[in-house]
Length: 80
Image (cartoon, rainbow, N blue to C red):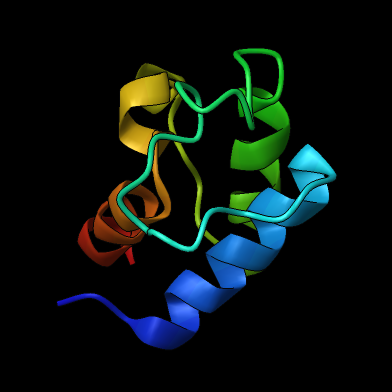
């Protein structure tokens, strides 16, 4: 079940890391759109860990898991 407050928090983190507005569509690929690149992934995951007090294992550091706000939200709903 998507959590709108969680997705808003994720959107804010994406904007902080990217330095640009996050896409309106939570399904849009942040990597394919060029908003984020592989170098931004560790920063994004680190920010998610801080914001949501969760530890993301290295084995989960995969751009596919963090490709969109919707995917991050789904990932967090499985790990919180």
